Image 1 (cartoon, rainbow, N blue to C red):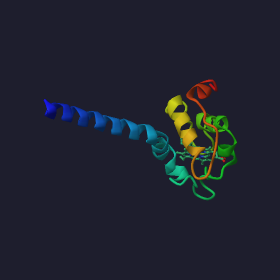
Image 2: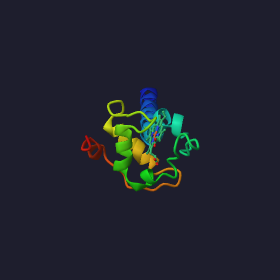
Image 3: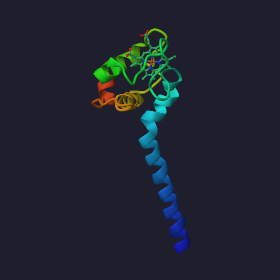
Image 4: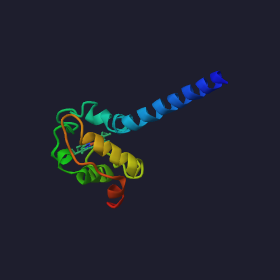
Length: 116
Ligand code: HEC
């Protein structure tokens, strides 16, 4: 009986650890999966090819402006409308606007859904 309770508790702990690491990583992980190929892991891009998001006026300006770039696309950057959910877009924007020295207000998925 005690053995059963112990393995049940171990299972709960494992699930808790797995779900909390997903929640903490999702914005960063989504950025790495969808954006870092061009803008690089450190957000600094590649000079004259991919702009830095770490020192971008658009990124430090407003979450709505970043969302519009992602929805419409820009130059060589594809549109992400339809391929990334509003929740994931909000997570990426909040990550980008609060990394590498950036500090920005958070945007919600609802605010993004109202843009289109
Ligand atoms: C295929 C390469 C590529 C990918 C992938 C990509 N981008 Fe871009 N991004 C670009 C290029 C190129 C520009 C500059 C476009 C221009 O101004 O002509 C740009 C511009 C931007 C800008 C405007 C920056 C400024 O200051 O002008 C933002 C914000 C941005 N990207 C965010 C993102 C985010 C967030 C993702 C991931 C969801 C992403 N990008 C994925 C290539 C990419």
